[in-house]
Image (tube, rainbow, N blue to C red; front, side):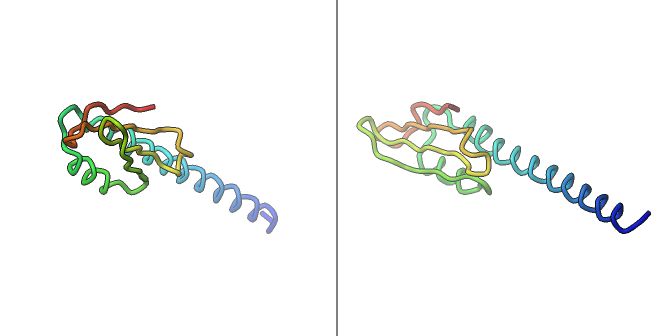
Length: 101
């Protein structure tokens, strides 16, 4: 085996490992959005939602005030925001609806 073949093998292995790592991280970021969104059923308090969202490693979220109360939008830049959870709250800060979009 000459140096060129060793280099090609090392490069191929490196690319395969990088691809596997990227796929695992992509899936973990997806699962954070999808599975956490499933926790937010009607009546859950906003502070509980925020506490749970704080446990995510790949999440980003935005809290905004809307006419019917407030809304949190959760997504991840790791998966290019393909998975998004919208959580709507009533004026008392309780979950009204949470869904994946």
